[in-house]
Length: 306
Image (tube, rainbow, N blue to C red):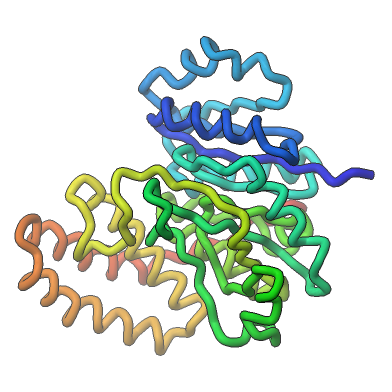
C-alpha cells in the first residue's frame, strides 16, 4: 500500500503568499495526497481568494476556517491532529509564506527509506528570497544525537539534528503517535522547536536534508531576538521568550532554567537598556514579564488516544 502525505499549512492574513504556497504544493513531483489548510480566522479576504481561484473546488484541498486566531501553535495542533485522525502516514508542515521547490517533498520523503535509523522527521534547507539560509529556520545540531554522530550520513547530504522549525518539515505518523500533538498553548514561536525536540527525545532521529529546498518569503531575513527584532513583531516576544524558557526548563533542567532566568532579568535587560535606540522600555517590560510568566507555564501534550 502506498504511503500517503498530507501537507498542513497554517495561514493568517497573507492570502497572496498563501496562493504561491498552494500553487507550489500542487506542482510537486511527488504529489501530496491532501492539503489541510488551517485558516486562523483571516480578515483579508482569504476565503474569497480561495473560492475565486478554484482552490476550494480541488478535491486535494481540505479548508478549515477557525473561529478565532489560535496562533501558529494552535493552527499546527489542529492540522496535525486532523491529519493523524484521517490516517495519513506523513505530515508536511509549513507556514503560508513558504514556497517549496518542485522536488522538495520528494527529497524529504526519500530520506525515510534510505536510513537504518528510526526517523521521526526530516526538514528542508530553508532559504530567504536571496538564496541564503534563513536565520529563523536553522536546525539545531549537536555532535551526537541519540547515539549517532550528526554527520554520519553526510555523503547522502543528510545531517542529524535535534530540532527544527515548522517551515517545511515532514513528520512520520509513528512519531506523532508516540510524542503527541504540538502544544497549542504556546501560541506562537518556539512551538516547532519544542515539538521536534520532543520527538527527538522520544528516540526518533531528526534529519536535515539540504537537497530539499524551500523559500521562506518573510519581509526580512532575521532571527527571533528582541534585541534586534522589528517593532511590529515585538508583541510576539512575550510568547517567544516565555516558550524558550519553558523549553529550557523541560529539556535542560531547572538549574539551567534558573541560570537563564537570572541572566535574562539582569544582564539581558541591561543590554536592552544600553543597546536599543527605540522601544527600549517596552522591550524591557515584555522581557521581564515573559520571564516571570514562564514560572507557571507548563502545558502538557495531548496524545492521539486521549
